[in-house]
Image (cartoon, rainbow, N blue to C red):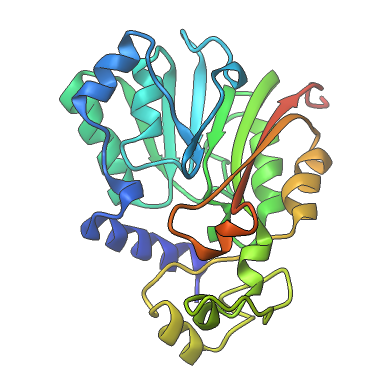
Length: 260
């Protein structure tokens, strides 16, 4: 299985099914953003603090694995120059739909978040990366590439999944029983059989990887970032979220220039 290809097809399918993260924002939301009234999500249910953002007027922003007609168009309406980069062409179509509908300018590029070679070094002032690195096996490469394409003193805003979410038996969780079953880091490829994946999620569903806190947080600092802020949030309608935070988000800065 080539993960990038599989997850591209899975997300295209989610778009056709109207998954909530594929539904474009309304014209009213864009109009409000133009007035300076806006909010966006890195994680489910908790808006990113406005203080985490630099001045967006003319700000070069990479919406990394962030298609779907939601965050990118809102930030564009707020004044930023947006490049939306996503593995799913159907998700990028949603960004273009909002841009054409509401007279926004943004650039869409299809690709793998682990490979940003299409961009030159130090191209962006801000990288906005909502929960999505669970769809790639190497999150360290995501951080290294993000660091490379971010300008000196630029900002990385990233949302991530608490890896403990993946440790429980999914069938028992539905019964309100929280029994540890899988060691971390979890992988849909290595931790369960093909038959179990078909039973739990369906073979055409996304393939996911839990990633450890060390690779998600420590991986950012290893890439060169300085983490300056952090928050946790919870998945809606998730029984595990009654007991532990489902998501977390980091604000990290690039405080050193790339070596010559």
